[in-house]
Image (cartoon, rainbow over all chains, first blue to last red; front, side, top):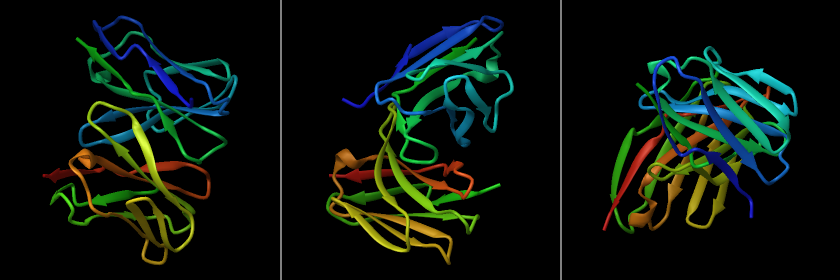
Length: 112
Length: 110
């Protein structure tokens, strides 16, 4: 069963706290992505990972970092979260670059 | 940078009537187009992919591509209330970057 799993689904944090969003996929896809989705702004690419320890900034990387130590796992880290990082975060994976993206169900993060 | 624009922002159709969604893009070297659907509070699922001019059908979903006009459309035949969702157009350019439109909110009334 092809699946992208995101944990947690919902998260509430206070400003200044650290946040860890986790994503796993069981399809051995090389490429993984983190997006955030905000009303009126659509999906914005935060980071893309081409494989283990091969990560590149997307369009809005400021305030975020990522970690990919295993092909099936890609983490998004917010060091000292800010209120403007309140959003829905989606992880996705794809075989190679630019092919069909398989999305997780999203993590709804609120930073108070 | 590639611009992907979708219209209309929202669309309401009656069950069984054809639904047509539009997407324009700015980079004429784009070579790979997909339509995704997003049900409320859920992730995206791919509906149809198209790579050359003409049409591509996947069940009740048909994509039409006209690269000269920088336009790709999605037509949903016999839409059902369960098709109510946000539909997003995704365009890949020659650098393998994927750009998404802001989506069309489709409501299908019984």
